[in-house]
Each structure stands twice: as C-alpha cells, then as structure tokens.
Image (spheres, rainbow, N blue to C red):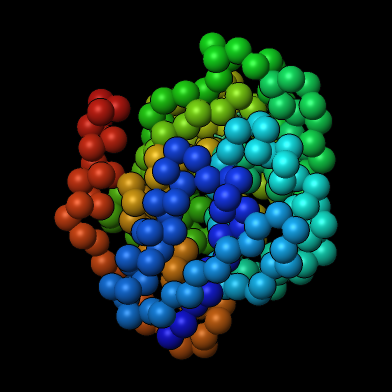
Length: 254
Ligand code: GLN
C-alpha cells in the first residue's frame, strides 16, 4: 500500500520540532509496510495531490509571509477536505485554517475559513503566551471518528507556545479533548484543538506524533481507508514512543 504526504510550507511553518511529525509518519509507515512518499510545497509553488497534508507552526512573522499564498490554494484545499483527505495542522497552521488570526502586533491575517474558529493575540508580551507542557483527555467523539486505540492511552500530550487565543465558534468544529494540564485553544475554555471531517487541528508541538503514537496510527489508518477498500492495520507500538508519552504524563503529575 502507498500513501502520499505533502508537507505544506515546510520552510516557514516548522517550529518546536514539528518536523518530528514527518519522521514519525515515515517510521510508523515503514513498520506497517506502507510506502510513504513525502513531498513539500513552499511559497509560490502549486500543491501536488496527497493523501495526508501537514502544516506546522511558526512565528507571527512566518505566518505573515505564508498566509496570502495559502489563500491562493483555498479552492484546492476545500476540495481535498470535502473528499475526506487527511489534514494535520499544528498551532500556526491550525490558526490559518480559521476565519482570521490577529497577531501580537495587531496585524489581522485572513484565514482559509474552512474551520469555524477565530484567533486573537492579546499583545506580544511573553507573559500573555500559553507556554508549557500540555495534557488533554480525548473526547469520545474524537476517539470514535478517528478510531483511536484508547487502550494505549485516552490522553494526548505535547508542548505548546502560542500567543493566539483560539475560539471555536460553532458545532462544526469539535474539540479533540478536555485540557487537564496547560492551556490548549485559549486560557479560559479548557479545550484543546479541534476536528472537522478528516482535519485535526492542535496546539501541540513537541513533537506531537512521536509523543502520541496512538494518533499516528489513527491518522495512517484513516488515510488508508480513504484510499483503499480493504485495509488491515495493526496498532503497533515501540518502547521509545510509549516512554515519550508516559514521560510527559508523569511530569504532569499522572
Ligand atoms: N505565531 C502564533 C502564535 O503565537 C503561532 C505560534 C506557534 O505556531 N507556535 O500564536
């Protein structure tokens, strides 16, 4: 079986170890006997079709460089979303799929408006940022839609560092989980990330997938099911990825 993964804006949106997600995809795909082809799309280039699209996070300045180019691809991306293609969006990339992102200097960047959410940064002070390790308990709707192996863990863990405060505006977007430690989407709502169709948006860097192998499995399985009629996929785990997940839980008092 083959899967294509396209890493969008890998040169600009790729911070706090986001590249680790691509490494985790490659590693797990190899173990599962899947040929994974990874491509990149940068500013000014056309997006080649894939089964999984990934966008990482970035500084406000990098989001300013990227957002107009991203808007150019709205038709293509919307079509892929409607087809059920899989998208993993981290932090700055997640914000740009919403209606808009207002950065710490007050610059308003128009988003793709594919996810019904908006993000405002109160200011550019470090003290206003949401920084640190984060633990969230997965919502049952997320576990069901993504067929997550909750016997491995019913939590997701990561590291967050964002000024943007994201508000989910309607039921179109459901949170991935309830925040047990840290902030997540914003400093008041105690919810982390969102999912809609086969899009996952999350504030978790750190990197997200190497610390959450049950989510890597779920994403690969979903992408295979979108592409092939008959899929057998075994949820495999290595000792190191179990340790990475458990270490953050332990550090967070679990
Ligand atoms: N620049 C955005 C913010 O601070 C995104 C940060 C990130 O991707 N880590 O909210």
